[in-house]
Amino acid sequence: MRKLATISAMLVTLAVISPAQDSIQWRTDYDAGVKEAKTSGKLAMIDFYAEW
Image (tube, rainbow, N blue to C red; front, side):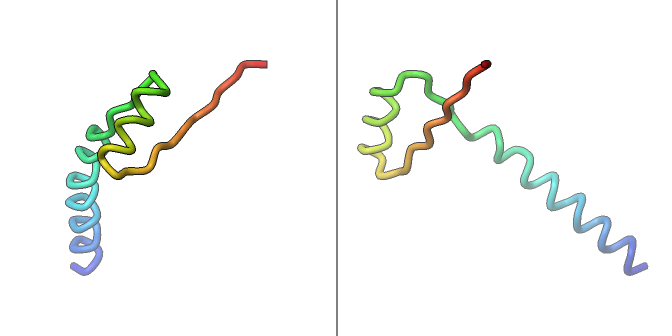
């Protein structure tokens, strides 16, 4: 019974967390992204990628 309760709690947690991932709105324009971060008081993450 305890195992069933643990699994059920984990499934409910995953169901609640997974929609939150859709709330990230990625920006591709650096200047617009920095301006938006400053006006909203949030941090900005800059991700660099290269295929060498």
